[in-house]
Image 1 (cartoon, rainbow, N blue to C red):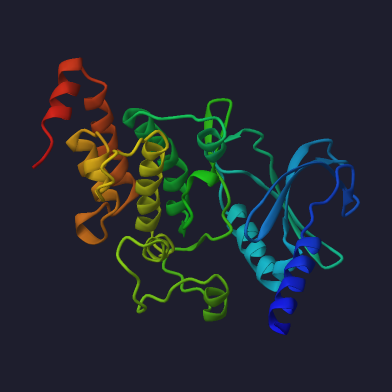
Image 2 (cartoon, rainbow, N blue to C red):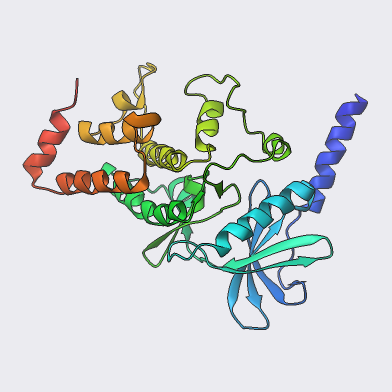
Length: 303
């Protein structure tokens, strides 16, 4: 009973500590809060006006309730963003501390979130449109991998649109290729050690694969992002039979083969973003061909 009460009070206290900063407040005497953009597991995002430069910027503030973990992740994200320069990756502007708080200052991408488009506005995607999304996201991923990093969190909440440009955001879980995070940090992030068992197809197994420190984990994330887009407009059959996505989704067999390869580890999967991009371009070209080609692709599913 006492333990339950103490836990509830900790939740209330953390909620109070993480309450968003009010509009008009100045952070570190320089950045005026214009509006609260959202809150993730470890940080809060604000659209701000830089009173020195007059420029609109994004302030990412570590959540006070996350303490040292939030600060460490924000520092890591700041370090990685400084190394990157790509038109689909937010630019790094600075990193500042104020009275025990850390803040990452970066380019403000004032666009639409892919997750919001799906869930709040009911946007649906055809298979070809979803493949174009993947093709766009491969561009920042290629640069990220070329610079020696892996994102480890390629999901719809981390994709923004602004003026027809697609951005990959949130590098809080990114790391160097091949880097083994300190055990303490992995435990705090609740990342499953490679030797632990997790049921195939479970969220724990998918999360472990997505968190691997190599480029193929980002390609694996792309595969699941595609399936998320497809299921956004999916209506389940009345028979409630448990079937895999290959059977539930009406996709050309070439698309199924491509997605399977994104989700496959080792030599049977894609080994690099460049290899994936090359085959994706060929697939899109085939799907955009004459209507008889599309009918052939759809009716010639691999048995």
